[in-house]
Length: 243
Ligand code: ZN
Image (cartoon, rainbow, N blue to C red; front, side, top):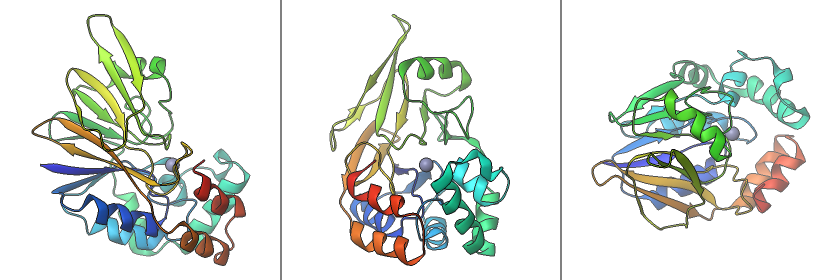
């Protein structure tokens, strides 16, 4: 099975469409949360996501906050402004969809899916090898797929040395997975690694191959919709630079 692994769409419909088109032929979609937040198209993104084949999706902190289930104070100024806007525009069906998502789920028997980390599915960021190492006992599967940091990354566990190493993947280079590890496909709608292209990964469940990908999309169109909606200018600017 060829799985499209995505995360942090952040209400960016144009980026999401570009990823779906670029990924082309896939049997399933695993989405690691933050479907809404920041961007101008929360309802359209949820609608398009819910149409995807064999979809598994976990919620992110922005999804839970948009439902009003988390104090807006947990977000900084601009993120909070955006959040209040999302809460105003979310449709009933978007809310039902987001509210139905399990926070942590096992997929295809050997992958654990969560937004932040297996230990703290909603909030913890896995940015370094120490946090990755501490998360290994928190999932029973070989692999964990996570989002939240908006950075494409791969943490490999060397069992003999009891050590985790971090690798930033080369785009388009397929990686054979063995042992245990934690993998992040990057962000579809708001990459933060100075590469503004939408990020995703393809995971082959039989060959155990992980393939990080990027695709350019019409950033200016999204910036125009952000400004039209009166969302923070910062969230328009950052898309062009990838931070
Ligand atoms: Zn996010």
